[in-house]
Length: 374
Image (cartoon, rainbow, N blue to C red; front, side, top):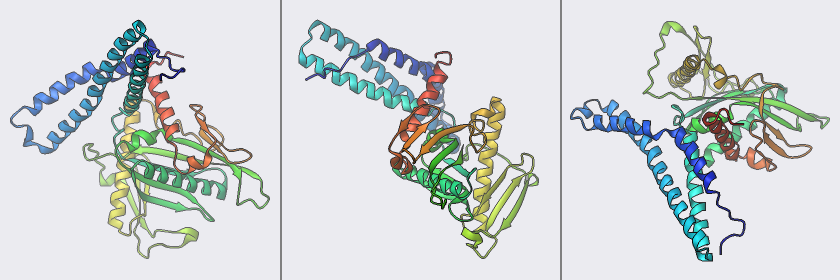
């Protein structure tokens, strides 16, 4: 039996599909695919195996966009025909078939639209996230640690692997700062939505008077650059310092100078890594993070748009927050950019942040497609 609440708005569905199609630009993608396939047909295609793999990867990514788009286009066309048949013969069985097909088509468009949101050049890459405790002392350090756990749980839920690159423990509890590598397909594409200042309101366990306290921590996210992006850093441009890795309360976690701090003199960027017991491995990890940060910095300059990566974060304090987590006097997590909210705070702290990420990405996509629509 067809649902009494079901109402197919075919013009709205077609309009939404047209927006997504315009964003994808299948004509341009198809032309690029033809170029790649022509190269793949050349007899010397495999002479440079690395370049060949790059072309194959690009071809697969293009096909992953245009093939489902054609399928959804066909389903919407079939849906229009089915709707006409139901209008002529509105039997209960026909109406039920229409509802089933319409819901399936909408679900397919929803899933495809989400993939469209992750169409940035670096979206498929691993993500490097840095968490910094802000105003609030020990409470802020504890909040930074809670955020670290939240993103580790999010990674587990979504099949990503994590690797701690650097951690500066708090003096009493939590962490002052940490850097985490999140490895997996589209890790950066999703986690870039989390960049900004996060605010916690609760009755602090570190406050003997049991008062409600507000604290802040910031999250920065950059894409890990891979070997396909060549970034040369002259040795003369960096200063490398080594020291002993430290634990909570100033305790040493290693008896050798294995921790590495690299300062990029021209930009002033500083990267540290102390996760590994090997100084060589820590240096390699730190250089990888530095290359990723320098690449992002160059991208910012090319776009003349520093707001894209850093402006949304702002000061680690009252201003420019992206999300508020209230534990007392009521429970609510609310994204201040999209309005997305939930009362299930514990689920969010356990890593269920996908609704917030998707709401932000969908909002960004709509802005990109229709910048004048309000």
